[in-house]
Length: 390
Ligand code: PMP
Image (cartoon, rainbow, N blue to C red; front, top):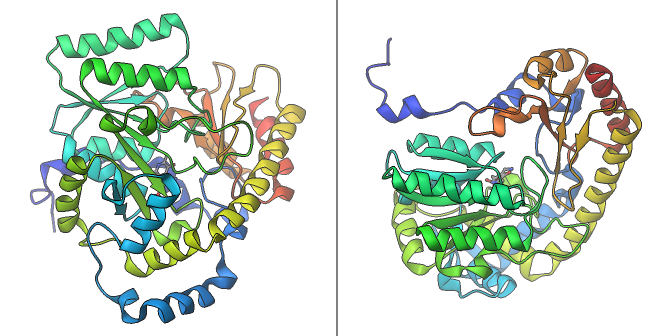
């Protein structure tokens, strides 16, 4: 049957993720995979899961399997409120931070509205904004006077053209894909622009707790709570399979999200919320995080030493202070989209950097993730990758 007449106009704006398509094609455990931003399975409390479920069953009985409140369970809201020192009324539990991104776009974006993004940016967010027919404008966040002037001029030109800018989307800590962290000056500049031009900031922080070097930066939410929607996630500090995250924002914004979520999924997964609240309030989250940070610091160091050992002249990379990714820039003539099939044929997977740019530019870049790959495979994978680039 031909269904094309029946699909909505919005489906024409759905954008397939080349990253998720990679996972469909290959068994990542059989190759040298620097592709997925998957947490290392050793960070999951798999062995303790049965006893954790038993603990919440004894404490809460049937409630753990019942429908829950749309805003999330009291226990999880309270645990997050304590940890991040914000009133529970400013917290909405989400079915993962991807939902936080999508629901934000859904309550703020009309077709043709501008969403500003850092260039490069997380692909899952771009996919969501496109599906609501946002006009996505990428900004170069280079911390220089010239670039700063250019950013202001770009925004001014959009306003002069009668465009409505709704929000700036940013992953300020150990960004996916670049691994880079915004300085306080960069954060303050974004806040000043948002205040001057009247838009909001969507601050997406799934990696914030994974800092293994240097001092934490102030969140944008702390700098401008009235115009920031802050997103957190349990995916990298507990388990992504739970699909659990949270939003921190003004109650007026969260009220719209609350009504929207009633139609989306009624409530976030209830059993998962009880487990997460227990994970947090028992102190397990922090104990586990120490080990997780240690693990990823070791992997980052190993990656960088192997890049230094094998990569030819003309290749440079970022030095992440946390998170799961680093970003490579290769000589101009190398096209990482074209190189991908060759790399896969010899057993190495990465994600081409151009997928993360609003206009598909920077085809000489690539994202390498070091969280999932076992240490023993890092040297082999980088050696093969370097020989392809050479
Ligand atoms: N934001 C960013 C920047 C991400 O990299 C990801 C996925 N890795 C997400 C959001 C979505 O994460 P989740 O839905 O698992 O919380």
